[in-house]
Image (cartoon, rainbow, N blue to C red):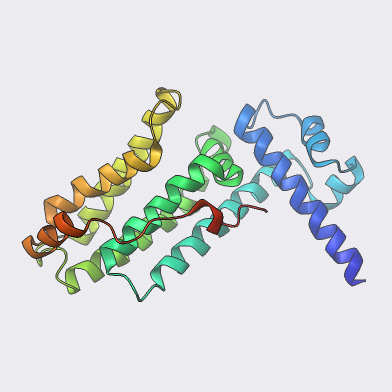
Length: 221
């Protein structure tokens, strides 16, 4: 029984992974179930055992991406060896890495701009990232890294909008720019507008204390 359950889990994961590749490449409307099956090496019967329809499969991809965002945010928020702004930088740097290399997260980004999935933006990875950003902004105020008069909601809105804009610009430029450096630049510009002089001085000397590493992301589904 345990062996059958593991085989079923692997089959489901392979189908989701193949679907993410197809949705990321073709979008939802043009995605082909036959190509998804070919990529997953699963049978049609196996696919319909796990998923009722193409929409059901797309939602499984979205849910998998949300889990990755949630796991990432929780892991960074639990760090006690870094200050709030270094933690924020690490989390955002990981997001950029995932958008560059994680086919599940790439597919989520493609799906949520499709008319069929507009409503999923409210529960997607961006919302999780926004909540974590606000938590870290509040911590940064408490730790004297952001000024006492800094508004965590304004900080979060401005930063998340800047990151979304940078992601969009990378698409327009056809991959000619590095997303990680663009995300870092957006973060630094927003922080500099609200940082305390003490933190700004230390940052000029020390820079960021952490960064995400591709090999630590566990990108296998």
